[in-house]
Each structure stands twice: as structure tokens, then as C-alpha cells.
Length: 265
Image (cartoon, rainbow, N blue to C red; front, side, top):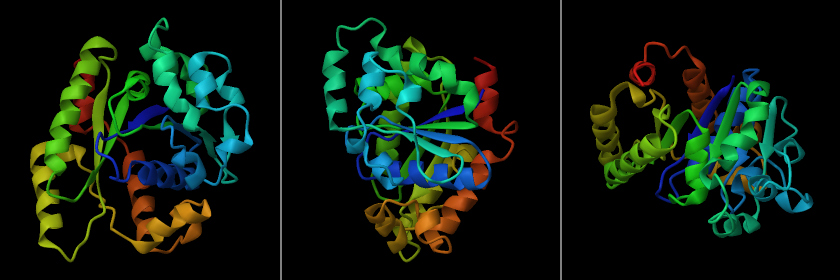
């Protein structure tokens, strides 16, 4: 079974989708068969990977409501080993329509079960809230990857996220762990950025990735042309950082604290 990783942070604008798209592309470059599942109604994960969700009749909306199979939703990005299950704006209605549905929090888990062995990595891009869409993602995942912006309120947002993850663990998914925290939008010119990284490392230890993602122009430009930065500007600082992050995520994890924690559950 492949690794199922939810990319989440309740704060908006912290690089969740940028991290999900570029990490998937970088892992695909390493030969890992990778699927990106878009659970955000904005649909930016798909467009960032070069797919127009409006061009297809089936999206994750139909999958969650049970009117389509996820295999009918998956689209190739044109990058070898990298596919996307897109979302559209209609996805925002799913939270309302699923309120009275049976096993509403487990719809995504059930949808992914038949294809879990077909991919080395399944990443789930979450919306910036703890609504039913994010709860579905956390119920389906085994790991959580948290992008954290190098700013003053970073630790405050992480504290709330930890509380919400614990609620999901207790009620729906006891195997869920935060396996990776990625520091993003790092500006080496400011002392604040270095202090935030140091604080997060002090609190979360080995869960904080060694690789830090810089604030870079090419990273901001890449979504506008519908390409991961590893394709748009493969030699840029942002692309190199995500390539290094992919190798770190892919390395053996048996000695990490979160793996030991999961074994005790």
C-alpha cells in the first residue's frame, strides 16, 4: 500500500497547494507513481499541475457523493508517474449535501481504498478549514504533511491544528500522525524567519524537515503557466528545494519519532 498523505494547515495562503503540486512532481521525477487528490473547491491543485477541471464532467464532487468512481476522475498531468483527481467549485456544495449522508466522514477513505495499492504516494490537498472536506481527508490519510509559513503566528496555527488532529484520531482515524512539517516561504534576509524555524524545530524535533522552501519568484510564477516549478524552472531555487524535499520525504523513515509513535497505537 502506498503512503497516503494529507497536506493541510487551517491557515490560508501558507503554500499547501504549492507544496502538494511540486512535491508530487518531484517524487514523480524520482520514479514514484504519485496521485494528487484535490479536496479544495478552488481547484488550484489541478490547474497548478496543468489540468483544467472544467474540461471534464467528473470531479471529486461526484466521487464523494458516490455517483462516480475515482478511477473515472483521475487525469494524467503529462508528467510521467504524476496524476491528479481534480476538484471544481461545485465541491463546496458537497459539505452541505453530505451532512445527512451515511458515513459522511469516510467517503474519501472508501473511494481511495480500491486504488491505494496502485500508487506509491497519494497526496490530498485540503482546503484551509476543518470542515467536512478536510475531515474526509484526515480520515483517509495515514500521514499529515503541514506546510508552515515562516511568520510570527506560525506556532499559534500549529497548536490549533494539533488539537483538531487529535479529535480526528480519537473519533475516526487512530493511525493518523503528523509525519512532516515543512517550513515554507523562507526569506533568509530576515532574522524573524530564522527564529520561527528554530522555534518550530525546538517544539517538533525530527518531524520538521531539514529542507526549507525559500520564498522565490519562480515558485509564484509557475502556477500561472499550469506547470510545477520543477518543469517551469527546473534549475531555480524553488525547484531544487522541492527536489531535495522529495528525496527527504522518500528516505527511510523507521528511525523517525512519528513512526515510533504510530507503532504504539
